[in-house]
Length: 281
Image 1 (cartoon, rainbow, N blue to C red):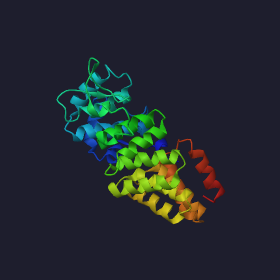
Image 2 (cartoon, helix red, strand yellow):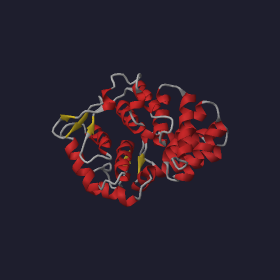
Image 3 (cartoon, rainbow, N blue to C red):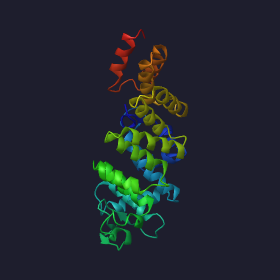
Image 4 (tube, one colour):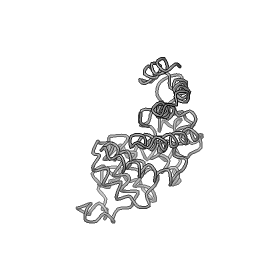
């Protein structure tokens, strides 16, 4: 089970973005992000991507009201809300709202096309240095969201070296989707080196290490994810599976039970219950 199938509490979402919980609460109040429906406030994995974009704007000094106003303006030229939000990263450091579209154009509200030297390069392969790592990261996010995994890989690779932990993490996910397990492991390792508190990167590193046959390394990485986020249901599931493979059924049962405690209604829950029944749990 990879990280894109889990849900997050407000506290976990804040931790994943390196933010105070109060900031996440303000974003909810401003309807910048929305929890899933239900009595318990939980957020989907997709919300993490939006929250990390919001976090970049917040760290650049943008308040929740300013983000809300700018996002509204951005959606006058880019209809897709997620694309409009990501496109706002082009406004950081600018006096006016500008929006970067998926095809690389730079627009201002009203649809006016702005001259952008980086976007003017006709070939990303010829002049990759004309874009900043942050710009390449945004292009990678858009390509990944559109299902263009190979394009996303090229964009994230241009954002390296010196890329953020998130760049390494996203690149690792793309490599994994392309079945490039060893390359994925390298990128998840790099993400944890850049940000040792990145629980999702430790979780995905554990998955890949296990698939590469490094059982001890997989278990160690997954335990690290749980040290950082004890309520990380997917990491409990993954470490239980890894422990079962090496014959530690007592440890596996403990983590299967924890998984059911934290995510009892998931599509994997019935499978976990069967695992417990068949393994004396």
